[in-house]
Image (cartoon, rainbow, N blue to C red; front, side):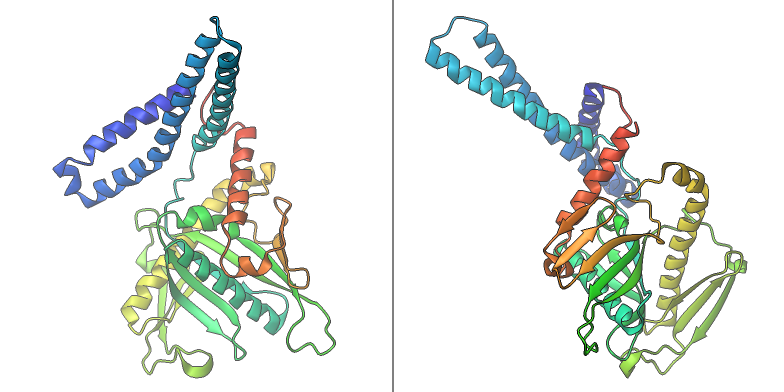
Amino acid sequence: MLDNLQNAENRYEELTQMLTDPGVINNQEMYRKYITEHSELSIIVETFKNYKEAKASRDEARSLLDGTLEPDFRELVQSEYDDNCEKMKNFEKELTILLTPKDPRDFKNVIVEIRGGAGGEEAALFSYSLFRMYKMYAERKGWRTEILDINETELGGLKEVVFNVIGNGAYSRFKFESGVHRVQRVPDTESSGRIHTSTATVAVLPEVDDVDVQININDLEINTYRSGGAGGQHINKTDSAIRITHKPSGLVVTCQNERSQLKNKEKAMAVLRSRLYEMYESQQTNDLAMQRKNQVGSGDRSEKIRTYNYPQNRVSDHRINYTSHRLFDVLNGDLDELIDALITTNQTEKLISGDAGYED
């Protein structure tokens, strides 16, 4: 572990020098790659520095304790020794997690798809609540959201919405949201006050580049049509909406939110690349997923991952036995506590399974 930490510190110093090189600065792709790596390593290097300072203070106190000291001073030194031992343990835990291999897609933008499930109009209204929650969460993180496709209902619900979240690290925070979300509440239309249970499905895809997925233009069927939506707010007078069918896989992607046919096509292609990437990756990892059946981050959309219970002001994540009675804070975008718990559990699972990528 110490060797890996020293290597990380050496690489950080190397990158610091490289980022001042005009040749690197003028190469946008190279500069972006190095600045991302530098940012990732900075947290490890800073924590390692704190660890070494605590170790030096502990060793100094240890050497004093080995000598002859006045009782009062010995008590003071012993306290300092114990404090630094505790600090070292905490820093070791942090470093263990920081050295856990990262998902290379963590720093990518994401494409989020929300669809109403069981429950009719109530499911559509719940889909809107989830969309609002994620949009508000993105705003808290300083990220930008961009609607790619939307299908509204007359009562303000969403049959389906597809949107981008654009920001550094978006995938690392959103990737655990894939799955079936369940709501338990009394609909406004329910005169007897009976609690209804409805569902919505969420899919989170990393935005991928052309080089990640190669698409043969001859495999595509591209159609244009006139976009529309509830209340007329998305209706255009020209055939600017795009529908792309990937014939080999049968995947169909639509995009209608832009006024420009070209922009809709570009965004539809981005969604298609991400869906194909996920499909190919799922095929490759399906056997391993069946064997390990990892609860956190499995991305299995058939399992109910979370319940939002309005009467009890409760949100429960069933994968990690997490429960909070701050439902409305969560629905207003305060998701960090929940997502942090999911990330911590995921990292712990990796360490237990031996995927930490280093030896003590």
